[in-house]
Image (cartoon, rainbow, N blue to C red; front, side, top):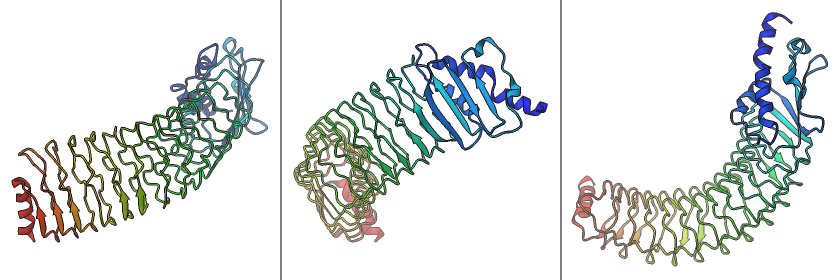
Length: 450
C-alpha cells in the first residue's frame, strides 16, 4: 500500500469516526445518528454496498468485507489498541458491511439515514425487543433496492415516522412479520418511495396510530394498496395521506373510520388515475381543514352529500385543478365557520353547473381565484353570498369565458377589498346582477376592453 492510499484510508476509516459511531450505540443511549449519519456516509463510501444488521452477544463490532483480500475488523476492545491499517489491501471495493449490535439499545432512529450508496439491507438475526423508535431508520437510502425485514423485532416500536421516506429505488417491501400494534406515528413512513410498486399491509395493526400524515404521499408507481385491515379509529391527521399517488387506480376506504380526523388537507391530491372514489362512509364531523383535498384529481363526479362539515374552517383549493370534474354534490355542505375559500373551484374547466345555495359566507375572508378558469360555467347564482368580511376576491371569476349570467346581488366590496381582475376574460358575461359600485366599475372595464 503506498502513502497516498494509506492517507485515504486514514481519512475514511479514522478511528475517531468509529469511536463516535460506537458511542452512539453503546450503553443505554438511544441510537440517534443525525450527526452520525455523516460518519456513516464517509464509512460507506463505495457504491453497491450490502448492509447486514444483526445482534451479537459477544459485544459490538463492525466487520467490513470486500473481496477475498480485503477485510477490516473493529472489535469491542478497539478503544484500547491501535488499528492495523495493513489489514486492508489495494484499492478493493467494499461490497458488504456487517454491523452487529448488542442488546442494550432502545432506538434505531436515523441509523442508515442518508446512506445513499446502500443497495441491500439484510436483517439476519435481530431479536432486540427493546427498540421503541425506528423513525428515519432508512430515510433517503436512495440506492436501496432490496430490504429483508423478516427478523426485525418491532413489538414495542411506537414511532415509525419517515422510516422508508425517500427510498426512491426500492420496488417492494415485505412487511409480512411487521408487528405494529404499539405504533402511534406513521407520518411520512413511505413518502417519496417513487419506485414502490407493491406493498403488503395485510398484517398491519394500526389501531393505536394517530398520525398518518403523508404516509403514502408521492408513491407514484404504486398501482394498488390493500387497506382492508386498516384500523383508523384513533387517527387525527390524514393530511396528504395518498397525495401524488399518480398510478393508484382504485382505493377502497370502506373500512376507514374517520371520526377523530381533524385534518384532511391534500388527502387525495393529484391521484390522477383514480376515476371513482366512494366516500359514503366517511365521517367528517371533526374535520377542520380540507384544503386542496382533491386537487388535481381526474374524477368526473364527487358526492359529498354525507359529509358533516360543521367544524370546517378551511376549504381553499379543495377542488382546484379538477379539470375533468363535471358534477359535484354540495347541497348539505355547511360553511358557517369557513374563513378561506380561495382557489376552491379554480381550473375546474369541465364543471357546467354549480349549486352553492346552501353556502354560508358569514366568516369568509378570502375568495380570490375561487372560480378561476371555470370555462364551462354558463350561469352562476351567488345571491346568497354575503361578503362583508371578505378581504380579497381578486380574480374570482377570471377566465370564466362562457359565463353569461351572474347574480352577485349581495356582494359588498370596501375601498381596501382586493377586487383586481375580478371579471378578466369574462367575454360572454351579459347579464350581471350586482349592487356594489366598486365591483360594477370593474365590470365596466371589461366592457370597454371588449
